[in-house]
Image: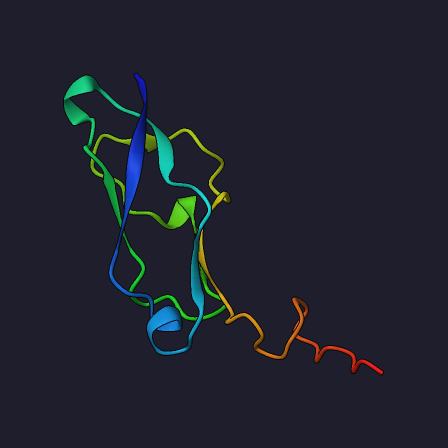
Length: 99
């Protein structure tokens, strides 16, 4: 059977705590295939080791035994964005000076 299960983000990401970044949770629920007796209450995702620029995709999540993914394995789950006003643009370049 296919069920939708919430994601539980645990820990404080290094990129947020020490580098001033922002945790960006892209999805908060995940579709899973499993037997009724194997339905988890939630999927815990430890974000503690994520630094600024790091991301976690669906295929990197540890699932309980007897549970499989429905989603694309490359789907983004969570990332740590650089601090706003960090002085760089999205492509890592310094912003152009205003005149």
